[in-house]
Length: 398
Ligand code: ADP
Image 1 (cartoon, rainbow, N blue to C red):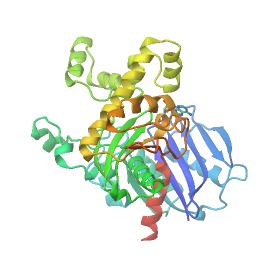
Image 2 (cartoon, rainbow, N blue to C red):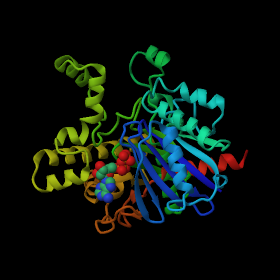
Image 3 (cartoon, rainbow, N blue to C red):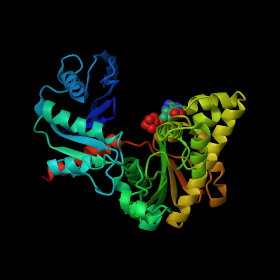
């Protein structure tokens, strides 16, 4: 069985075609700048990367062109559309309507559309992607996999916000959490690597990418997570603020005359590590500048590591102890120095990093010493594989 995994953003379409017999990625890529006049497809196949410029107006045209490549002599990996058995769609927000992946039907499409109010930027492109598949590769069973679903096990006293209860009732204003597919994959993979049942472990997963969130996992379930009503909350990120004194927002709006949209732009695109350092949202640049003596880059690095460590401690409370910490995503998998600094803050709780083992990037690896009370691992995430596995499982049981 071959599963096509689709992840649509407002101007992008990412994809992977996965052979589920051996979970091999046959082809993958990203169509960028859809509808912006200068769209191009980066298509990777057989270890080669091809950049194909082809302006498209919408996701349907992008999908059509991408499918042509999958079928082409030059860049292709399949000889007929019949080889694609099913499609898995990444859906960033399922509110509290979805606690697991589901087969997409007309009713499910309506339910996904009803989440638009809470995810106005992310939901319309997903619906466009689903429609595009119905037109370009009709008749394929499709599955929706939600970033929020894994966190539906969080209990009410942990997801409720201390604002008047009427706003929870009126707007469903509560913590939802995101990156659930990644937290689920990494916690299960870590248990496998540790030769334990995930049900016997208390794990803190640190998904540290551009967007970043932590999750406390106990009994294989999400107990608490750092992102909330939106993905701007929790730990500070590359360009997002994370949690703040809420008065900072109202103060700035008054003093700077920001509209709500302008304020959101500051919190989402100009804050976090970029905001403090003034250098870059990319940790590779921050590390370089900090090592060369840039004080604000150093400050951003220190603030970030302290903040992540604080949240790990927070989830030690939620889990009533911690057996293992897993680092994942771009920063978690690759930034050796950041992992080291975070772990230095946690020595009091029995974290002992093996500095030599920590010199590792992008591979499954235990990086704590044998006598470390809390085990520390690097576990690369693979959200596309989870989407493909869920899709296969649902479609096989139809
Ligand atoms: P996204 O949330 O967009 O998926 P990623 O998980 O790719 O983000 O993380 C992006 C961040 O990861 C970058 O800002 C960079 O700091 C870091 N990063 C990614 N790849 C590497 C690498 N090979 N070496 C060091 N840092 C990396």
